[in-house]
Image (cartoon, rainbow, N blue to C red):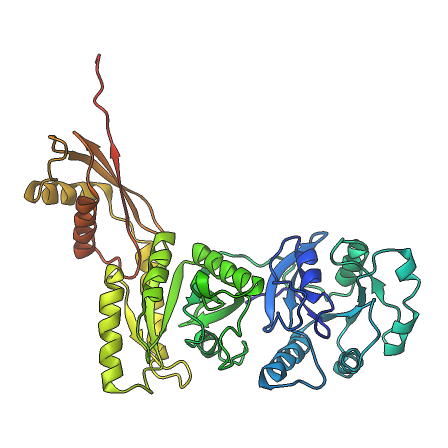
Length: 441
């Protein structure tokens, strides 16, 4: 777990919190939109300023009178972030009149007694900077003027932020050498519920409303005694069903998480089974080279007929990743979730497995003698040498003479490798390189 100081960025909706977080990070990570309520869960990032590392937490907009259960959950997440922070950045809109929600956040800060930096955002010049007297009414002292969009005043703000941080216990920075585990799936299949179950707390907002998670939620958890970075992603929809820019960028970030994941928990709603969309998504994960654990959720609430349908749909739609373990759980009740840890660790171990080169060549020669590659264009290719060139995912290079190996023969060799070696849950790359005959020697 990180020993870095934690900075929570809070404020009412639509004051520019996520824009400021992106400015602090120096890159676009938090989803930004003109509409209020785009950020919903706490989202953590490791960053630094002038050599001082810290964790910055983006939060949803705090409202004193939430309209529904979802807004109440967003407010609760923001308050939890304040309670867990070493320092709070309170962001107010310099262009707007102070609201009851601004007053509510200020009271919350004063009651919490946590160190804070009060920021007046959207101050684009000296004229606006001279008109901040009204913000003294919050009882928080003088605001620090910034423009998160243009970067004006952000350097001075970060100097003040770092000056208010407690001393780090270790003085070091958080490393990223732990395994990365992504939870993916269609909207509303239980991804956030599963993340909360793995974290052992209500860490992520859960709602029956599809699309509640907008940003990938990243946190460290211990699974069977080993620290793992777990990332909950926005539900991935078909492109034709994405209705606005916020959904588009949320899905785009989820796809980016897949590219960086070591293992993917591929969550499927057990009441619905695997669909064509899951088939396409599994292809994407396998192409990215990530390990896969197929997780059938809500298994405790479905009928025997639904179970049979779901099992058949997985075998039919996901037969091309039949090497992936299938775990049946209930994220909500916790039933069978203890099986996830052994499966995850087995896949991680398989991804790092390496076949000794002499042994691999003996195997390939034996398979080739028993089943020679088919003749292509009047020539029969021949594998003269094989080597496992990499891991994560395991990658085997075949050096070939006499023509090109077809995809069918590459798949044949992959099946043979899987029969002989335990590569549970991980894709295997089998790549052929044709050796040209050399003349004049």
